[in-house]
Length: 322
Image 1 (cartoon, helix red, strand yellow):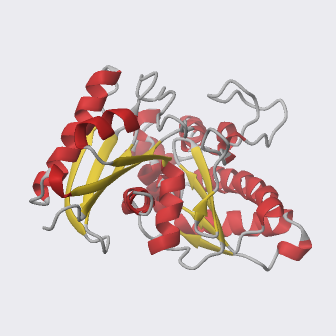
Image 2 (cartoon, one colour):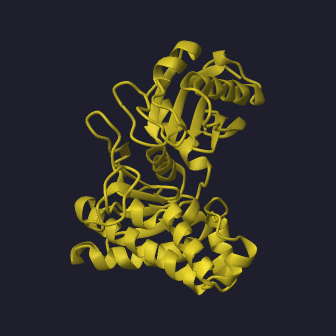
């Protein structure tokens, strides 16, 4: 491997972290995955991330001297000035100074992106939105992430990453959201909300397969369980999922009125598990709720890259800005 021919793409999630070493053609050379342990302190979390990067380089038979740049995709708003995550409540961390920490230890340029920004950029470059002039990304999961890539640039705010579509108000006075507000999209359409409603349906006897095979423990009612429940005839669960998808479609229609994308990319764990229902309901509802002039101006695609989207997008963004 010649000097400075490797870039690391890093995806930090609430349950796992993943580093992939890629060459200049974005072919994977090595990778490492670890659990994200919430009980760790911020400094211990950074050390664990550093170990994951070094192990990915080892797996690629590379050294830090081969490294050109590191790109991070991380959940939540990113402080663009500092290259830091101001708060990671799902991990129990208050702040992560990623750019400073990794620049000091590896001596390379470090870029820090919101994970959905990174994922959508990966889909624009390598996946479901290749060639798009303007792409809107919506990634439902534990929360609901949003992103926009316009003319090959991630749309970002003055200081922070933006496009937090999960916190658009879709139900005035509605359920309390994790952000402290009421009626956010996440409060009516995230996987946690869907799982809670499915558990209630199972408890009532309206979702017999789910009750028998999975039970009512929210920790067990994840995206795959919801998919299997629908496949096995739990019509109440299907109705819950379709209702959530329509909420997302209404929010998408509002955003389409603002940016007129040519592609809407749907990704995240829920969409991966139940692609047909989410695509059908979101597309139909978005077209019905945007301006007539825009209704035939966009296509809706399911993300193609899966877990690779964020690492490839973060790597591509980092390498082009080294």
